[in-house]
View (tube, rainbow, N blue to C red):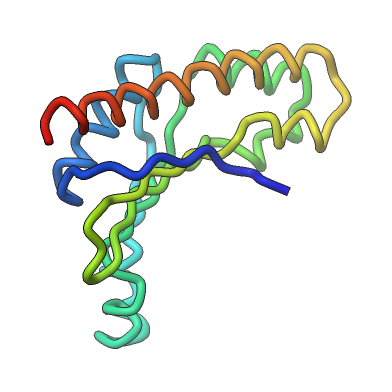
Length: 141
């Protein structure tokens, strides 16, 4: 089962993180949380674990309008929010990978038509953001 949408771009890791933030904002998402996985692994597990994961950040993206609709339909969906977006690049990789949660995962877990509408909207927005990132990468390469 696929539960993410993915693009790989020729942007540097830092540029990809910046472009991802911009593309999310352009499609109505704010970043509520940020987890620097590499820094966390370095602090908790040591340099070898941090090196193994490479550059890796998890952005907790939220579109308040969509989140409020989803929670009104099924309050339990709060456990699946915010929509996680990963930007990662392993040592020696020549491309940076950006992945978003596939909001259709929510539909698979619930049965509400209202949730399906929210998931469809979120899915379209997240895929559009990924397309914008990929298009910007090609233009800048």
